[in-house]
Image 1 (cartoon, rainbow, N blue to C red):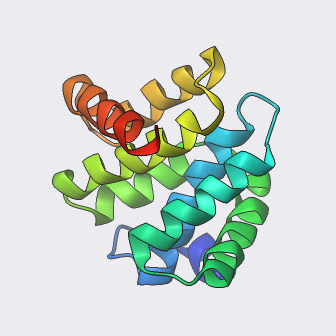
Image 2: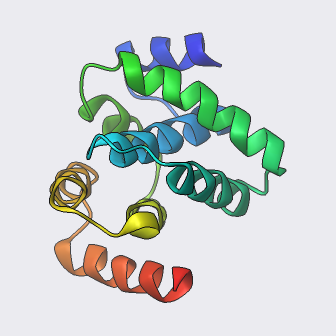
Length: 145
């Protein structure tokens, strides 16, 4: 899975395999969580919960996806690699869902300036409007409070 995703990062656009999409989203969530240099257990649990809910994964399977994503995120040069994969393979309406999933992780331990800045970058790179991102954030806050 890891090798396939790395090859996909360097290849022309094509549809993501299901596991590649899961890892790409998880890598974005990990990057967001690490952006403030405080990657907490609360954030790890939230990533696992979001992956479980988003993809119907068992908790141990979600944790495995997160683990692969942590390794991938640690070696990635930039955020664009992951957002490009998602943007090319996922219709707009589903990208709004990706942004909502990211907001759910961001609000796990309150959103600080680094996380907010990265969310604005990711939202723009995914081509999601500020309005849709704001609505996704409100839904995430309601869901997680």
